[in-house]
Length: 187
Image (cartoon, rainbow, N blue to C red; front, side):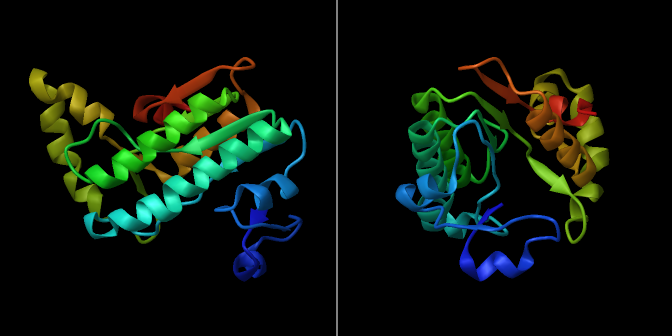
């Protein structure tokens, strides 16, 4: 697992920590091997509109460094957790993630891009109160597509989608985008 030195103590048992600075392409190159599968989970915690600079400095910079390093080393597959697009809120966050997706496409890596909107799980249950509004929006033709694209997924669904992405990469050179509906369907 590629991690920062300050986070190495949180790496689970049975997992080897590879220390690297994910914001530095050279550091990432030193931690990767040809054929590796890389799951990019770097991001600003608790994203909100006031963190626009951090989205550029951390979220975008890290995926650019990882994509470039992955191309240089010849990794086999990159899995990137992006965000549902387009979206009417969190514009700076969505823009940084969209730019990250573009960096992956420019790298010509084999990649899977997961696009959740909001992941429900421990400490993040408040959106459950919105489920009746999602159900109502799904009944209105003009809102239906947005309700699906910006739907909620559970932590279990997200983990299943990540595992599926790792175990079933797209064909060499392809980029597969998995939206909320695909995340929910992953087994």
